[in-house]
Image (cartoon, rainbow, N blue to C red; front, side):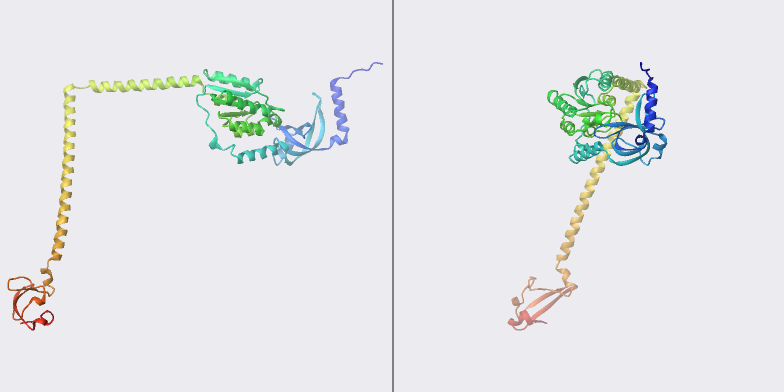
Length: 411
């Protein structure tokens, strides 16, 4: 007897009933790492839960997500409690989550943070070593997959924005085994074979953390760090960050953004140049017209008279400045000379012996008026003349000659 076929919807409905009746599958407790987390406009969350060998789809209802004390993130290790169900229209099954708890850090996330800390300590991310992107590059190298939306978008934008740039594509794997080594090799190849390249862009479109992992490998970071050509990293989407992004001279949010950052828009440059030229031309024309009006306006004879008068005023001002300067110099010199004479007079006055007479001293002179400087030169009965501060007097020396210097008396 031939069996009657069932419909696909009947099969999926049957599987759904079987899963619902299985106690082990209706009360699951499963641990793993979150990858590919997305929050729908409806508020529901969708992600994959993975370990080192497999993954399973998960559905996180909006009501449960809103009550969590944390926001699920890629690389986060969690423990889910829920049940397995089938989405009958497509025949796919997923874990419907009732509760979600954090359970440490995922393996990929932990490896990423450890490598990031190591390279940061070695100066790979130091802003001081990063080079500016040339404002007007002529040659650009693209190290990316030869197929896919990323390379197509970059080439389209580069050629649309800039009519003079030359593009070289260096195709490479961007995920999977051998991708990291191939990316690093292509970066070194550009530096060795085409050192005149102005900018090197490396990257790919979006994907899961595993898909982007090649750009987190140490070998790629080493190649970017050693590159003599400025590097723009453009990996994934706006929220994706890789080790290549931190090491590169410039990080672009997407490959499309990288192309826009790499080259200026030649049409905009042409428009700006035309605007500057027009502004300079108009400004120069206005200046020339103003000068022409000043030259032609009024009576030429009157203008000559004004110019002559202005020259005379300037000449008089110069003469006045010179006169004042000379007068000031002479006055200063005379004051200095007067000060020197006054100081010399004061010194002479201090050395004048007559000033001592007012203090009780006297000058002794002999018959010829010659001053007596030694007592031994006097003789008994010799007449001497004494000069005081207020007049003169005569005196006679008496006493033994040997006592004249010490005990002579005057009568």
